[in-house]
Length: 62
Image 1: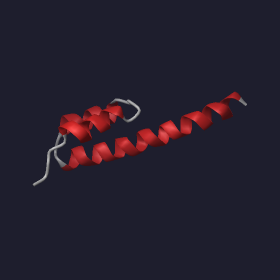
Image 2 (image 1 turned 60 degrees about the vertical axis):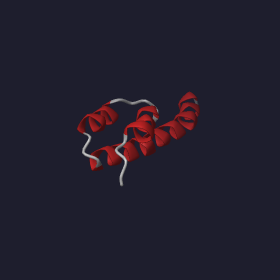
Image 3 (image 1 turned 45 degrees about the horizontal axis):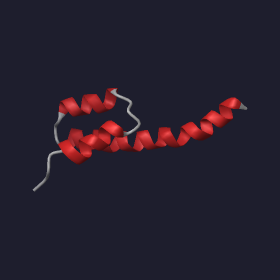
């Protein structure tokens, strides 16, 4: 019973993290930013680190 309740609250967080992590990893790999790729891959930050990367540190395309 407790595990089912935890899963109900935890599942959206897991999906949120997975989506942002995937986008951040894809963009950092495409921009050849190895340090960001490793940081996003290793650090579980509930999507905060990938969002910071995407908004502030991603290389802008011309």
